[in-house]
Image (tube, rainbow, N blue to C red):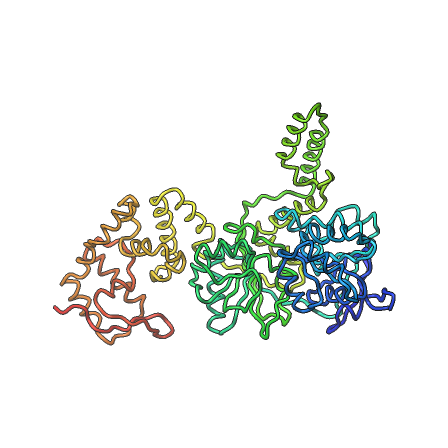
Amino acid sequence: MKIKEININEGQYLEDVMPKILVNQRPAIPTNTILNKVMTGCGATWLEIHSERHSIVIEPNVPVIIGKKAQHPFLFAVYEGTTREDVKAYLAGEEDGYRKIITTPEGFDKKVLPAMYELGLEVYEEYFLLFDECEKPVQDVGYRGDIYLPVEDFFKFENKAMVSATPIVPSDPRFEVQGFEMIRIVPTYDYCKDLTVVVTNNTVCVLRKLLERYRKAGEKVCIFFNSTDTTLSLIQTLKLQGRCKVFCSEKSVRKLKREGFTAVSDNLTELAEVNFFTSRFYSAVDIKLDYQPNVIVLTDVFHAPYSMIDPQTEVVQAIGRFRNGVAKLHHVTNTCNQLESLSRETLIQQLESKEAIYNKVAAIPTANEIEKGALMKAIEGMEYKRFVTRDGKRNWFMWDNAWEDEKIKAYYKYPSTVKAAYKNAPFHAKIVKYNVAITDEDRLHRKQAGLKSTKELWREVVSQLDRLQTANPDAEPSYMLDELGDEFEAMVKAHTILGAKRIEALGYDRRKIEAALGSIEENRLLTSEKMQQVVYARFHSDDIVPANEVNAYMRQLITDNGIPFEGRVDRKVIGLFFELEDCKQGGARAFKFGKRKYEF
């Protein structure tokens, strides 16, 4: 495809640089073009909405349409709730001026076109069709087949264009046949934003740290994460209830409300301290704020595969939603070397083979209606059926979608492939690696163990707590609880008091463990009169002693006295003898000793 470049200076919009092609020599988008505007928010849809011609603008999602309608009240918006009769009434109205229709792909196919046919309009000759965010038919058609519906009619229009800041050039040969040209807008200044990519084995840990940093600074956060189920889990784990909102599809709104979470909407409303957005809000939506939020793109390959998004398109689009700019930008992601992805050559070979078999089956002659019905049922059950258009031809957009899926999976196999994906993205990307003892994969193992049995869950959690203790011997139970989540409070308590060996000896049996916690012999031995005498001779009220010194002394004391204590020696042990206050001494963690708990 031929590429034409047009320079744009800082502060300019597309209306300032696009060619003047209409009768009255006003700037407009030329026909048979894919407009790569490069930057979000530079006025491509605005240009068409205000052009002096009849227009149909197709937008990927309803929030975009609602936003555009609010900005331009003269637009006729078509989405759920708008009927074909409403469209006919608008088109048949006597108002002067150009007809401006903005619609979802589904609304275009099922309402706009049928209404125009019924009115006998020469739609393909009289209207300019603009397909906005034109990468979406490629990226979304795999799970949202109806987004492809306008494509077949798109090529029938005499005047048409596709536009995006991040276009994916489709492989459909009709673009070449009809002589499409790509117009690429070239900024004459550095428009790329600084972005920190945190590649980690524990996304929850990194997210917690970032949110705490922003909370202390009193700053708002917008998180793009394409999974409502995992979002709800994060809200619970990070204790964000009452501080956050979720913006997602209407279907997901209903689902979250059934789960008891009500701070959720399918359209933009006033933002909260922390805001989660699913893919419904990744492109085209204008989020206008009087401040610049911090933005986090979150990817978790283990718990939310659909959160694997393309740094060169979807990350760009998500961050570009904010018309007043953004503050700090992060993409927090994990990786998995077990992700399987095909090369483009292998994928095409597989699709061509499946297509050949499909075509042979579809061509089987039938002798009667029964055989015809049986053949149709067989065709409907074939995997390749979704790669075929309604008129039985190859769906090129589905082929492109299959390749996009494979390409994106390859991005998230290793930290190096994530880094490579950002080389061609319009960011000043800084790659940071951050790993901890307990990982996102461990979180998945806990989930899987819980599905098997309570004993398996205890076994897995105790093993992970042992690793946490090894990595951080002085860690408090509260730290363990933060790492695993409140639902494991009983397990953290048991591990702290009984220790891993004792829990294993009890066969990971919850009832036996609870019984052991109810009658701890160790505590009686630990607080014997002999132990009280030694401890109170060493430490006194108002003393300030480094925590590691106190814990080391108590650990040695327990060993010297032969006490069969297999739990972790930490704050809780010395806390049996004194009221304590945490403090610092020389920058190190310390205990300030208060009132004694025993008198002998």
